[in-house]
Image (cartoon, rainbow, N blue to C red; front, side, top):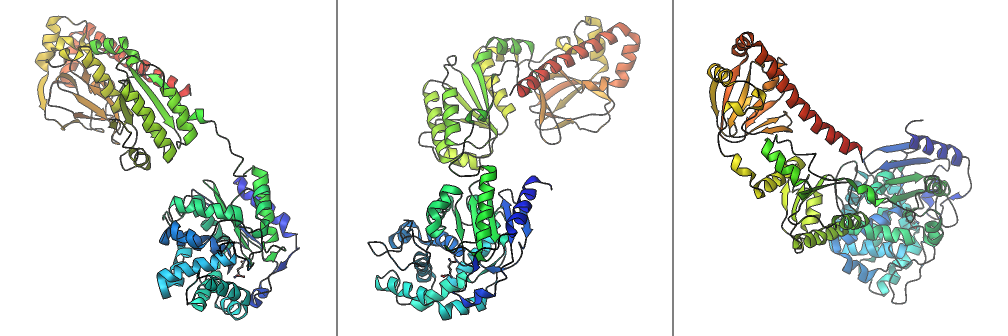
Length: 603
Ligand code: GLN
């Protein structure tokens, strides 16, 4: 029974299949042909997985479930003002086919027949003869496949649907509908006769739960504004005169149809589709209701019963002292960074940012840092931010900027949803420096600190071989010897000096310029400045493990291993010293790596 949710749905199916109370709808003659034993359950997750149990691929007519989607379509194509001018959003507390209108002669809401017929009327006004086609195609996009129509059910309801005809003429009387009453009714009857399966319903519901994006096809079908309005009326009126009871007991926006289907859409979680033709006195599928109730009760899914520990959205908050960028710094630079350790603060965030999470972050940001503090916010684990979160963030950053904090953001591309949400607040947003990678942001911040405290004076000049950490302790004669057996090399900006996979046949002493060691994926392992060696692992390993690129024009001394071998033979003590120096450099890198591991595991 794996995964567990599949086991749960199977148990529900088994248990509720035994319930044969209720009756198949018979006021539309063709519906009496439904097999009362059919029972299908399907659940679609917002990452696009679909669970199916029982008769989940048996087609039946969508009936009133179409109302939710046609309302969404009307909002999307005509705008909320037009739609709201014609149809209310109040629960009627009456059956789906009630003929009563509100005091100002509008249908109560789009989930009862009067409102749904008005909705189809709006689309007919807009699209003319193409109205049903548009509805049909839209339902298919929600389901992620082309849907058929049950012409027999359509014809049957058309021939007998006098009550709906009465509702439509009442709407005509109050000018909610125009002159084309019969054409509108045809659109409505036909949309009700669209054939779906429980699986289709689950996907359609999951599309509503997923902010209007079909989780299987990835297509954005309606805007999140329209989703919120649609789910609202489903919540208050989706189950007709059982709606109050429904929200109280189940608490998941839902819609039922007399064909025996029910959809339930739990925002950001799942879409459920059930099919069982036996209906209760409200016109809701008996077994479908039970599945919804069980799912909600067993997992505590009531929409109003949510909680979240917003403090988990900060995965780490540290000063960039122990955890520096991957640029290998020279000793005088390290000294400055160590002394000014608290100047650079890094906050790494995680998870989608909500209103409450960002409020918490804004309070954490508020600590008084040193004057001229550099604050780095890393978003690489943040997939998105709500409008509320973006707004709070922009204002928090504006406050920090006013206090003189330098603001750096990292870990996202400018095309991301996250940046679009933040950028929408550009009238409050202060100047931000953006880096795609956190490491680059830390390096930039370190450069600022080093620059402020005079560290750049040391950088411009070319270093002598005697300043190489790897050669520390060698006497001038030996240094000269090494200089003599090495080859002076120069590289242009952007040139590759070493390629991963090549035989490691030499090591390099950087004398001027800057190089970076990178993996093929583009991840930078280290940046190296004059006075340091690279490719020095050749002393231990036979093959290059990473690429080395010239970030600037570079001058270096390449020492072939063959030449070095004879030096080592003639100067065994120096050879050992160099290996010790190498060990010390590796140890320093290990200490740094350990500090990062420590930091990551602390959260
Ligand atoms: N076509 C049906 C009707 O108008 C739809 C009703 C329903 O599913 N509740 O009567």
